[in-house]
Image 1 (cartoon, rainbow, N blue to C red):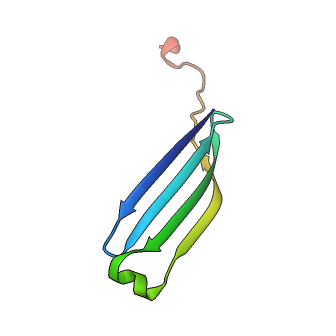
Image 2 (cartoon, rainbow, N blue to C red; image 1 turned 180 degrees about the horizontal axis):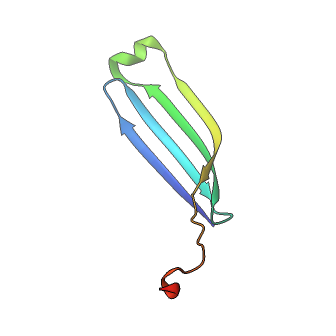
Length: 74
């Protein structure tokens, strides 16, 4: 299974679009593919500045190691 999220944000001069895809392959490590688009609008368009970023992340979820049950010894 996978989880796809898309977030659209607006600041003073730019539109931001972030697409995040989490691929569920196990309990502890979740690979993520992402893309971030940033493009100007309004008066900010005059600068002609655009940004496009893609990448792959590994999200690690920490786990607990449980030892022997000590409450039984009391």
